[in-house]
Length: 361
Ligand code: SF4
Ligand code: SF4
Image (cartoon, rainbow, N blue to C red):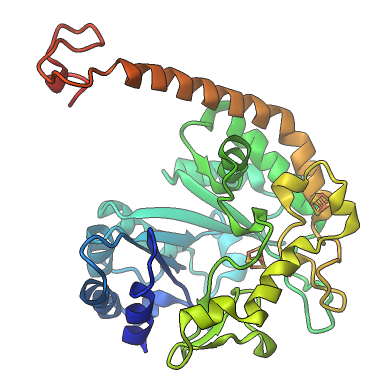
């Protein structure tokens, strides 16, 4: 099944082949599984194929051998860490009820030692929603400079929020406090994906995260048995698009079920159509809207919090966009000065050293 997945995917034409290995817990598969993945990608990819592998893990099972492999093949590893020990251990426990913070940190330290690219994914739940400042500085002081924060929003089968889920106002407050912790000193030293994606959208018009898009045809989820679904929040029987052993990617891409699923994103609530933040918010993730009768027209259950956050940070993110654009202009001017020929010419920076030995290096 693994070979079929890789072979058929590598048989499509992509500027970059992106595979994110998620579980459950993908590290349970062990290093040999990932070695096999690489072997199959080499076997079925063309010589020029660019492949991005990423792994989403709780980091407790990372070994030195696995880290070596991830470093060698430039896997990007997302590590779940919800904050300092006391906070992290509230929900992230073993089957025996023991906290997993120590093991997670041990795994992340191994990744660091082998220079594996990693980021930290923090799930914001009732365990940590009041601790934005503390969590941010904890991660930064641990030397973790790539963060992403995800709101924990889960409904029961009657579409009521589960107790560990957060409410809109809490998410808004958390994000405002997070931004206030980050903005004064760390804009160029700590990357917070939630903020980066806003800048990316405002400056370059790029949707860095699927939530910002106007369509949910963003990726495919392949389950352990080969079944395929449109989104990992919507692994539901009626949304099964096919199976890797019998359905082609083209069939799934064009299937009415996939197209219909994706188009729901734009069927946002009428309040969204006149909202100042629609460009950044795009009505929010479908998962946060499909609570009553599975209707995409429901307003996001996080809406008031999203508004608070966008209003609180708008002015400063505009300043930041301007700063970045000015820096880009300056950089472009420097680049324009680089001699088009003459590696042996004196360097444009005025050092008196040959270009190839100075900035050209
Ligand atoms: S439902 Fe949410 S997570 Fe899924 S593709 Fe749409 S925006 Fe992304
Ligand atoms: S902030 Fe609320 S009203 Fe505005 S686009 Fe987002 S979900 Fe819609």
